Length: 346
Image (cartoon, rainbow, N blue to C red; front, top):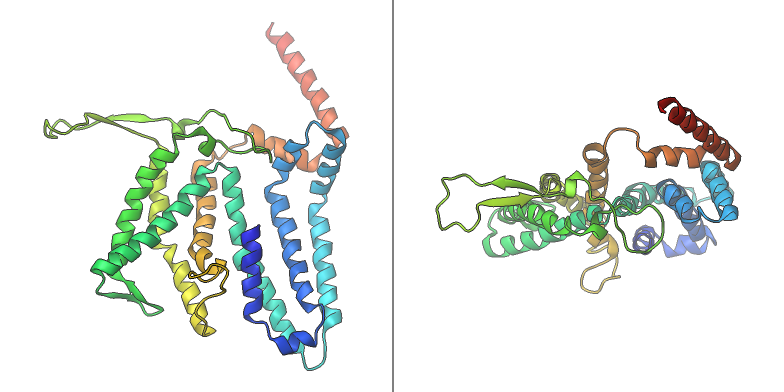
């Protein structure tokens, strides 16, 4: 959240004009109204189950949060409408173009920056592994691209970034894919990295790691020389998924950086901000990370999470859509069904 606020600040200031802002008191506040409305909507959707699970044992807060979650979309909609009406009421003659430009720019920030980076939070709750591995691969790719480009770079890669070379790009791709396979094996052996977080507590996590994080053993072929130290190797199934993440981090994610470079050239600026001395702003550091976070979430939901109903999915729907009284009625009904089945079996 802190990083998102810094990024929004840098991007809000990018198209800001001091003279026009002085003529529009309170107009900056409107940008933040839309920002925090979007934050309430996105995080409310992502963290609804964790919020309810955190207060399950407190009847008052449980009912209060269940009601908020049920009507969250309505609340966010009317907050947005309030901002929309506020914007209309602030329109001033001879300032229309600037104001509508700022209105469009604010929504661009919310869509491109805020919504994408929110996937990072969703990845963390699926297990820190699904946040740490993709983020680490982007960092490894950046370092490897610099290293290979510095020592072997000869052929320019793209005009938007004259210092980028094909040698650096290819070398970094190979290094990133290999690192993904190895790093997944290391990170996948720690339960506190692989277990999903079901609530907002900060306690130690323990869970059944599942088949993805249980080693499988492969016997190496007999034609290997006798001096080779290993006769078999252990591989976590998640390492095969890590190869896909490494491939994306090395080939597709860098285009997020190229996009940012082109954007800065269009506005004739070197960096989006100066929040990090010597490295520009937070937006400069997060361009590739945002692209990677979205892919990691989509990949996890599409190819890793079982495509069927689970206890967690059904429970989330119950907590979202049923009142406390309806949930109690469902509990009693399930109890009757279980009793009938038990007596039927006996």
